[in-house]
Length: 125
Image (cartoon, rainbow, N blue to C red; front, side):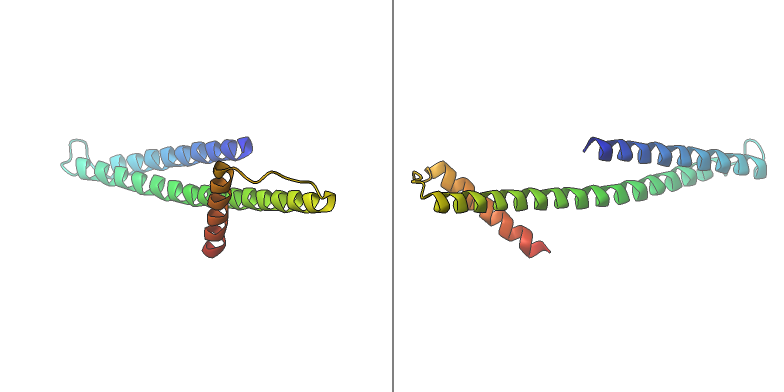
């Protein structure tokens, strides 16, 4: 998890430095092509900011898509692990003829919630 956070932070830093470079280059080109005090200075600055915002939005959107996919995979892995653990426990109980007390109401609710989530996860695929 920490590795993913470090990668995400590095992506943000790279995107920000790329945007800074593009912004400086645009400013230089605009200043070079427009005389000082030109009335068009403000609209070009707004266009620069708009381009910067669009670029940052695209970058953040792609990063959020990756985070959502990673999060979904983690949830699926956790659900699979819990389901496998429950199966192993049941199998061991049957093999050893261990008398297990019935589940409490809280345990039954938790099991039902897990099964509901697992079914929803399967339907999303």
